[in-house]
Image (cartoon, rainbow, N blue to C red; front, side, top):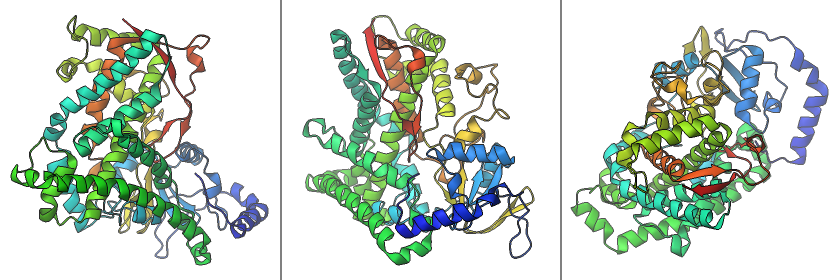
Length: 513
C-alpha cells in the first residue's frame, strides 16, 4: 500500500511514532460509541496514524495476522481518519453479506473512482441506490447472462486455439514460455472479443487495453492518502497529484472507448442491435447501444460499464490461471491426476478440449476451486460501506464505516479448513472435507467472488474461460521447468492490487505429447 507523502505528513508520522510508540503495547479497552453501545474490539492505535503503521505491502496478510494476534474476527480499525471494520470469519462475513446485506450494500467515496470510473457510473464501485439497481439489472439481464456467456463459446475456443498455436511453436523450438504473459494476453484478447465483437491484435489495440488495465488497477486498489487524512486536502498538493494521475488515465480510456463506441455507431451496429432485439450474438457495445434509451444510459455510463468488463475479465482470469499452473508445477501428483482425467474424457485423436468435454471433469473443477481458495484474485473484497448502524455478536457497527472482508484469511484459516496451507483439490470431491462447498456466495468460508447484492456479476464469464484454458494447457502438453530449476525454485510471492498477481515470472518448457 503506497502513500503519497508530504513533508508535513512525514513530520506527523515521526512525531507519532517517537512519542506514542509505547501505547501499542497498552492493553485493549472496550470501546463505546456516544450512545453507550459496545463497539467491535480494536487493537491499540497511534494518534493521527491510527492502525495505519500496522499495514504492510500485503494488507490481507497484515490484517489476518492482526486478527489472529488479538483473537478478533471483527475488528474496528482506524486507518488515519478512516474507520474500517475488518471481517475475518465465515460467521462475521455472513452477518455482513447476508444478514445485514442491505445496510452494507453501498461503496465508499473515492476520488480515483469518481474520475476514472465516470462518477462512478459502473456496477462495481457505484454507491447503492436507484442507479445501481438499474445498471445491475442491465448487466444480469442483458450483458452477463448464462445464455450470453454460452454464446461466447466460439470466441473462447478460438482464443484458446491461438494460445495453443503459440505454445506449439515454443515447443517445436525447445523454448520456454512466459506463462503469465501468455495467459494475460489470452484473458485480454477474450475480453476484447466480448466487448468489441472481434480481435484487434493486428492493430495493437488489444495491447493498449491490457496496458491501460495494468496502469489503472493499482490506483483503484490502493487507498488514497486523502481518504486516510481528509484534512491534508486543504493543502492541495496531495489532491492535485491524485487527481492529475486519475485524469490522465481517464483521458487514455476516453480515447479508446469513445473510438470503439463511435465505430459501432457509424457502422450501423446500433441500428442492427435494436432491430435484432438484443441478439445474443451482439458484442457488449452493441447491447449497451441497443438498451441505452430503455435504461437512460449516457456515453459515460456505457464507458464505465465497459471498464468493469476489462478489469474483471482481464486481471481476474489471468491471475487465477497463472497461480493454478504454478501450483500444478509444485504438486506433481495433482498435475498427473488432472491430466489423466482430461485425457480419459477427450477422445483419442481430438487435438483440443472443447467445452462439451468439460462437463464430466469433476477433478478439473476441484483444482480450480482449490486455486481460488489459496489464491483468491481479490483477497480483500471490494470495500462495502455501512449506510446505517447494526449489531453483530453484541457489538454495534456504526454507520459510515468501510467494511473489508478478508476472503483470503477466511479461506486459509485452520479453524474452517483442514490442512489449509496445502494444495489439495480432493477436499472438494465426494467424501472430501469440503464436499459440496462452492464459490457462488452461499458458503461463507469460501468467497472468491463475494456474496449478496454486490457479488461479482462476471463470475460465470470468468470461470468458463478458466476451465477451458486450463484443460487445454494440461491436455496438449507436458510442462517442465527450465534446466537447472526445481519445483522449490518457484516463487509464489504476491503483489497486492485490485487483483492480486504473482510477483515473479513463471517460465516453463512445453513438451508436445
